[in-house]
Each structure stands twice: as C-alpha cells, then as structure tokens.
Length: 266
Image 1 (cartoon, rainbow, N blue to C red):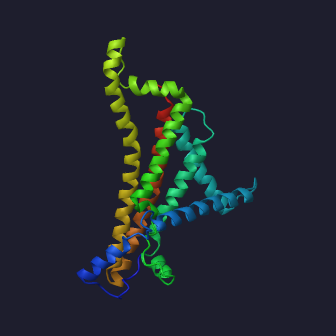
Image 2: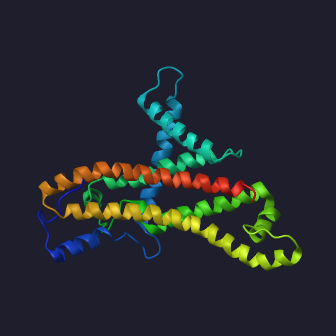
Image 3: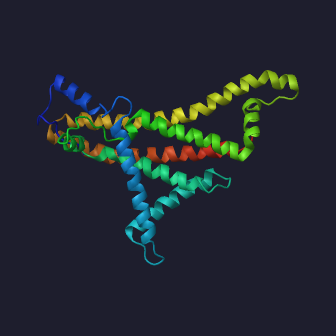
C-alpha cells in the first residue's frame, strides 16, 4: 500500500516532480548505491535466517507453517530444476532456491508504504532511500553478471577449457574441412559472444524494467488524495503480488535454463 504525500494532499506539478525525483534518487556515496547494497544484504541474511530456522525446527511429524512454506518453495524450485537441468550438479538446486527467494524478497520491498522507510531514516539524517534493490539496474545487472560467470564456469566444467574454447569457434555453424572451419570461425565466435552476453543483459533489463515500473506506479499513487490511494493502491498491490512472484520465478527459471544449455554439447 502507499502513503500520502508529506504535505498531506494532492501536490501541484512542481511538488509532484520534486517528490518523484526524491523517491527515485539513491543514497549514494558517488561510487555505490548504498541503499541498494545494504537492503539487498540484509534481505540475504533474512533469507538465510528463515531457512536456517526452518531446518532446525524441521520434524518428521506434523510440520509447522514455516516448514510447510519452506518445503513448498523447495519442491516448486526442484520441479523447475528437474524439468530443465538434466545434468548432475550439487550446486544448481541450492543456487535456484537462493535466487528465487532472494529476488522475491527484494521485489517484495515494493509492498512497503512509499514513505515509510525514507521517513524513518530521515530522522537519522538519511535524506534519500530507494527500498527496492531490483529497481536499480546496477543491482540487476550485477546479478546477471554473476549468472554469466556461472554459465562460463558450468560450461568449462562440463566440456573442459579446450572443449569450451573449441565450441566458441565451431558452433553454431559447423563445417567440414580446415578451410571452411577457419572461414566460419570468426562468424561463430561473433554469434557465440552475442548469445553469451545477450542472456545476462535480457535477465537484468527484464527484472529491472518490471520492478522500476511497479515502483514508479506506487510513487504516483502516493501523490493522490488519501481516499484515492486506498482505492487504487489496494488493487495494484494485489496485482503486484503476481508481478513480484512471477519476476522472481522467471529470473530463477531462466538462470536454470541457461546453465542447462551451458553444459550441453552442440
């Protein structure tokens, strides 16, 4: 849900512009967006704490609500992994669970009232705060770079450094004979690089675009009178639950698919 503008009513164009700019400005030290870093880090520990607590309280008897929830998440992610990733890996399932829950928690920060955390931290002298890390393209691109590193690592582990390097120059267009292979090598390398770097770029921009748009709509709703905020903010928050969950699932599922493609041989 959203909260009313600090002035207590419908803002004029100038005030509305300043309000939007204020809420879209990061708390930055000139090099890093500190709000993105700290909120994502804290949410990462929240994820670890919840799952650690669930593992400690796990029982073979009647499970509690927390155990039911964690088991449901793990079963859902495992089904996705098993349907897309057919190689053997002890890393892929924990990685997929971590991505899904962590991204979901970061997306879910959009459900907090727009002015809640910025107002609280303003008393500590922090004037700017963006609470949705996935609405920061730097963060989504950083996560996608991590996925890119995993893609390369999985591919080298499955095919060897030599096999992976050879594939860069011999696929997708295969040739017979030395001359044809040499002629097609630059073309294959260009296509391989385009495919390799298109994956993290599409991952990052898809998540960023959806969450940035959702954040902006909540900010715009916060500019409306209080009765309109509840009238429009409620349905949008309910619909946004689907977006938050879907985007976390898509990021996780595509990561698994990309890693599955990385270990397959052409």
